[in-house]
Image (cartoon, rainbow, N blue to C red; front, side):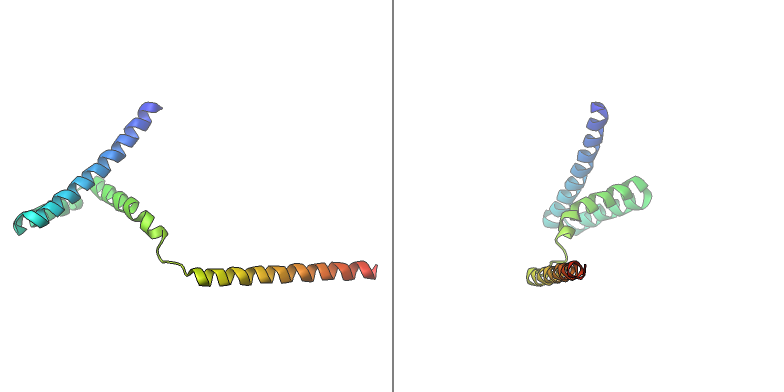
Length: 111
């Protein structure tokens, strides 16, 4: 079991490291290398993406994991509006509870 977990974690770490290395290489090529080299790097990645289903799956998984924390906070919520809705829900619940108690008291008085 430990070996299987080690292999799975190693694979994920290798995937993340490969994409981080590619991102660093791409940023480096934009900053310091001629435009032809940057285009060649993009072309290499595009060809690999077109040919390999493993690379497609890895790219989608990596970017999904990368943007998942961002999507948790987007779209931003309005705290004032949320608080107003919460107060309205609480008021409606209190009104329903009061109406139910009144109905129970009326039922007791009838008996």
